[in-house]
Image 1 (tube, rainbow, N blue to C red):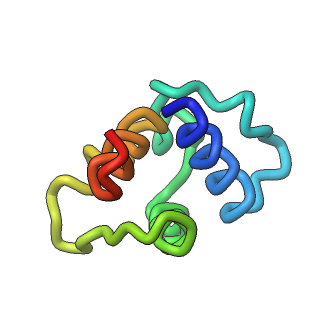
Image 2: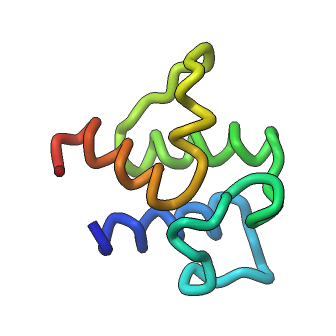
Length: 87
């Protein structure tokens, strides 16, 4: 799971071109949006596309669970692992 979390952090930094942030500086349970990394809804769309390309997972635009899945790196890792049958 640690490797998956590292890959997610790399996708966040690379896909969103976060020049001031390194993957190792992202805290696993810190909020990705708002007070955490400070990402916004446009970033969410870009991140969703990048995660789909990297991991082959799909996010349903109408799903109320998206907010939960994108809450933190830990939440994304749990979602991706479940979708891919890793965990």
